Amino acid sequence: MIVINKKIIENICLLFLYLVVLTIPFQILLNSYLIISLTLFSTFYFFSLRLYTKVKINKFYFLPSLFFLIAILGLNQSVNIDSGTNFIEKNLSSITFPLVFLLLTPIIKKKYCKIITVFAYSVISLMTFYLIFQLVLIIETGAGLETLFHYNTHYNIAKRFGSHNTYLSLYLVFSVGVYLNKLVKNKKYRLFTLLLIISSVLYIVILASRSQFIALGILLIVSAIIYIFNKRELAKGVIAIFLISGLLFFLMKNVHFLSYRFDKIMEREFNIENIDKRGDKRFYRWKSIYNHIDKNTLFGYGTGDEMENLNTFYQQDNLFSAINKYNAHNEYISTYIRWGWIGLVLLVIFLIYQFSLSIKNKDYLYFVFILIIAHLCLYESIFGVQKGIVFFFFFSSLFLHKYKIQSID
Image (cartoon, rainbow, N blue to C red; front, side, top):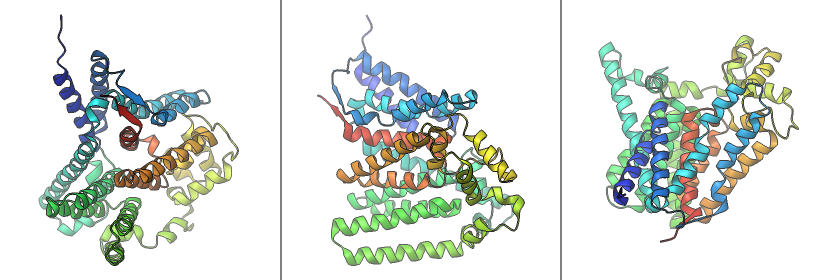
């Protein structure tokens, strides 16, 4: 007879959980294998120890899984079944993470903060390694250190390791929120935490993602406002907002490639002199989509047919440089194309519900997480890439678990 050692199984599950969160910023393939392993061990842990009688589930906990369901249903309307199947495979996280956290309820009920902190430390460690690697290349080629802030550096740092500057910046912005929370709540190691914040901001500047630099500003200013309300420190809060705004404006105007990406942004996005390059600009793609899309579709065009429909729209407006190259770069638009009003309403309700849940429970980290996700959805189609979808559903499910699952001891 095989005796199952509960402690050993728990430790193995915890190990894989930490490995998953550690590798979210890393290569996709490694993270995928670890998620599969975590799911298998979690299932074994839950059923072998008969824990199914010790968990009380709130129905709203399964909200993320509705995205997987709607993706399956949307496959019926897809012409490109292969593309739809690939999309569903990427979005397995929407059902995997709620399931895994449910199975591991007795283990993780007191480890939410530690899991989030492990992620933040992983991001800063990885980015530091990226930066050192880039500095070594600069020294070897004899280029000046100022090239660290020059054109293409932000792409080279991310793409050399199979990542993307926007999503690396997203992880760093959330990490800044984690460090700010620790700075306020924990008086120990404040100098070290402040150093982590400064380093993260520097890395966000170097990566030069416009959307995430704006997200950083939103995060810092919103954090200052929250501080004013919580601590009743109006003067300090107002001073902090002015200092934050001034610092971000200074960086935006004086850091070479960051300033390049922000200077005359309206002129670059809306200038039509070079008509052949119009497809590179988000404004023209969004305008093309708006002009040609069916604005009354209830069920959308299908889970796998987003790019085919976008290419049709682009071609009708002669946006040839966008064909087979650019998605909508807006998750609200992409969701509507795939699943119509039903999908778009589901996405908006999901975000609003989590906003309300974070406010009700006065959970700062939950609030800033949903804030930066809702903001990112304006600029990126995050459901279409695993770097976005894993991050989104991992932490959405973790926060929902915190407030919608009860462990009965």
